Length: 65
Image: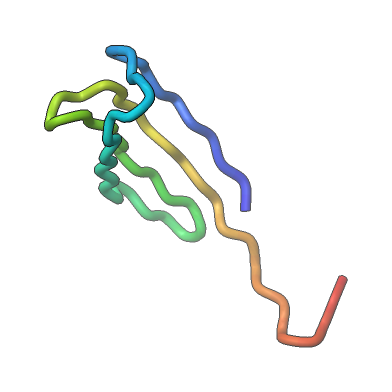
């Protein structure tokens, strides 16, 4: 699997704060996927961006390359 992340930090997050994340699949073409991602503290966005990923092919169980 390969991936790329483009995130913008909006506010600082401090130790002890609960960090929640929201992830939504927006596009899927063949083995490529794109997600909108957001991190929140007390329902206030602290980071927002896009993550893209590409799935590789799976090998059968017990086989190696």
